[in-house]
Image 1: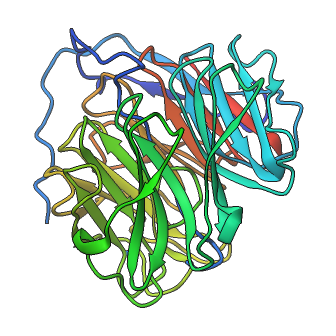
Image 2: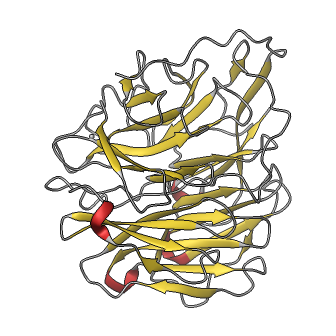
Length: 380
């Protein structure tokens, strides 16, 4: 194991049972992403899991040589062998051998774009989001492993700034823009990202003054199941989480007990293991600022949130549930990674390497990515 990934954690009495009928990669909910670091706040706790536990397994991040210096904030785990990353300078990489080799499949002429989210359906089909004001916000799709790309959306409204996207299945997905005329803007697709349309704003609550989403990890917009999605916000007086049960047409909103009251603070990432159980992580992304209470948990679909009893010690930008587990999840950030064995009540550090985003595939293939071309796979 390389430097920065030497710390190991022993996963013992916390793994839940493996479901007999897990969704396939085609059907599983895919995690989403967030906006501007430039612009960017009393649930019933999950019940104890008394199911038998497997034997202890030692795990830790194992760095892979990406051959790139880009900062990767977009990540899509297809399996333990196949993953996609997207990042700065229009960079998209793909591996099909567990990270031993990475293919540069960046769209031609995309060097000026800032990719912050990527959602992959398999080893050949993926959709990537570029963020920014005006026509810097774009969505592209590939059907041949990145050999060619087709532009499905280019923003023409200078007031919009798209942060992240998520898919409910291979066809249906939504993308999120920071507020326009006081409300978050939602794009919708029903053809796998080949074309998009702006949804009416009537069902969207009013945004707070200064509120936005953070394009930090591709996880400010996430989904679970065929119709539910959640938005993480910050930058305003209160950090909030918005929820839709109809693929983005109408939304409800609730406060989240994480640091807020500043453009650099809020909820940066969400993770839902089903339509009910969710995690929120964030804090203050400035390295010289503390981030107390930087994690929260929901057991009612995001209607209410409770702060973690023992949160991570610093700002965290990405989070993911361990597949098939009701209790284990991982969160990452520039100063390290943490694991929870009790569905988000308490967290403990297991790695001090810098990562911005994290994702897991149904076969337990988990990946993390971040600055200076850093990509790692969870070794276990």
